[in-house]
Amino acid sequence: MANALQSRLAAMLEVVYPDLDCDYLAGELMEAMGLEAEAPAPPAHHNNWSESDILLITYADSVQATGEKPLVTLRRFLHEKLADTVPAVHILPFFPYSSDDGFAVMDYLSVNESHGGWADVEAIGREFRLMADLVINHMSARSRWFENFRRRKDPGRNYFVEVDPQANLSQVVRPRTSPLVNAVQTDDGERYVWCTFGEDQVDLNFRNPTVLLEFVRIIRYYLERGVLWFRLDAVAFLWKEAGTPCIHLQQTHELIKILRMLIEHHTPEAVVITETNVPNRENLTYFGNANEAHVIYNFSLPPLLLHTLVTGNCRHLKTWLMSMPPAQVGTTYLNFVASHDGVGMRPTDGLLTDEEKQQLIRTMEAFGGRVSYRQTPTGEQQPYEINIALYDALKGTTDRGPDQWQLQRFICAHAIMLALEGIPAFYIHSLLGTENDRERMEHTGRLRSINRAQWDVDRLDALLADPLTHHCQVFRELKRLIALRRRQAAFHPNATQFTLHLGLQVFGFWRQSMRRDQSIFCIYNISDELKQVALSDINLIGTDQWIDLISGERIEDLAGELTLKPYQSVWLSNRE
Image (tube, rainbow, N blue to C red; front, side):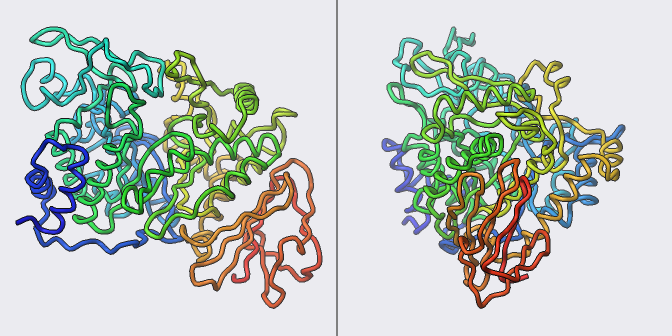
């Protein structure tokens, strides 16, 4: 007789595999995850995070030392420079790969030998909460599984999506301009495989439940090696159905729920994060009813914040923030301004006009950025992402070009991110103030390489120790702001948030702690001019003592004004 967990899994599996014995499949999944029938259910609506949580995003080889495996160097750098700053680290794919800087995985269960070994990954996991990628939509065309597909043998023979090249694929949503269907020679003739992201990344066939079982075993392997947070890469494309857009299909949502249920029954403190670089309304669906992703990336934030700071106008950022629903307890947003990928343009659909998008693109190109494109179902090419290092992206404004406010504008962007509802995530190159790496981009021939620099750790240490460099200034100030943020109950990822209305050149919002004993008014001059804000417009409670946490300045006259320098940030709190 099926137990409660098995019955719940079977009900979800029925949606995905209506023709299978889903009770039996649920039992197989539980066995693959090592779950007993009486496995205790995790607490409902429980937050596996607090205001002290900050995530660092890095490649295994973002910092390097001669004669040393990069994971060893990374661990030492994290321990020496960031142990008191970031409690969680996302190491981007560290597996053997054939392309796309790790996202064409050849072997899910091995660590790339050039990076180090599992012992190095586990060592980082013992000191930091560890996040890893589950590259679940596709796999390398040079993997053993795909070689077996070609040779028509197991495991792999039926692990990849095959498609009739004459099928109606006109509605398929594409993130790339490369061919969707690719011909492959196999031992029993030519076959056609589905490649969402390119011919070296062949989409996996989740219609075959054996593929789901394989990934459950992979997840368990990661859990046993200290991974606690799982980034489900490109998961929106998981299920394919000819004649549909093949994105956000119901089966995809059910598979995420199934994986979450298995993961949190194995490790209640684990977290599932969906990577769905899509328009905002579509992105929000991955919360489900607090039963799908624990955390979703706030993909609209980077382009909107970038647009705000280079135009000096926060209208769209403010409108978006007012429209964002508060996340249910047990779910939250992952806020970021930069990542290993470019600044996504699809998440601006419905938020910026076509002309505003083009204006942003022209500005970023003037600052050294490049643009990659995607193909629409009608064959039209549209901007997909802007590839640029964030420090260079904020070197000036649309109207005036580069100016003297680059550092202040860059810090302002992160001060906004740090205070918003959700968990802040810093790309390592933001913490370091890394600039465009044109040489690397030209060497690899890939636009994304412009923002994927690799530092020699000795040179980096010297720059971070020199207070005259912008690298040192960025690193010290961001560490200081992070330390301030981590001490404020009102900055809990699920604390109350309301948008303030302070005009188009001053952006602001109010945060209140879950116990309602701390309020912080977060106010930002997003222009290159001096601005005054009447304190009466903020409505500070007169019986409280107010202090700007960032400058340490106390507010004595509640009828007075705040004078904000260009790109100055203020966190007015009634508690120190």
